Length: 281
Image: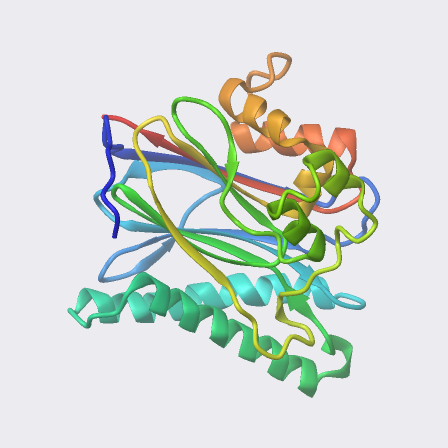
């Protein structure tokens, strides 16, 4: 694990999460999750709140489902429910001293969610082909570990400014963007931008999630979001709203600011944002 150069370690975590069906869809196929874990229990967290970092590990996730009829809505909920069911078991094993790395735990989790979705798709005609993106963060003191598949996104907003996408969009357009063959504007208008190459479930035989770890300090922020938010906001807009909020609606938390602005600007898709703020003592 590389060393971190932290000026001020974060001691508190503040979070806010919002999902909106958008202006045109009938069903919300997005879902998000916030959990606290320790060696004894798992607790669901509310849509917003704050807690001390040293008392628990924290799990945050965003999933965007897809499939005919209501299958997409069902798929994203299968993803977040499986996290709640399976991750505490792995956490208990790690707490008892079994040497299991974060990537092994998250890889097994993603594999089991994929297997469950594929099995349900084979057993029930109405769920055939259902799938879901999943972007998950595991927050521990000084480090955030993540696993990701699909085109939901994870961003890091360092204390000193800027915004950086940590997750890779599993689309051909995402690959072109990473190769600098397209810029952000060209990628957003490309006709193939929503063509997913990797999801959990669906017709994907062997998903290959992305794994990573990033050190953080007090003042850093992270954003997990569905592609509906990306369609409505440029990266610069996300950066501005998370750091400064909306001066016309100061009562809104960061996630509410993001989703309200994205739905107002676009709103064609379900829109979800989950913001994590790392605070000092």
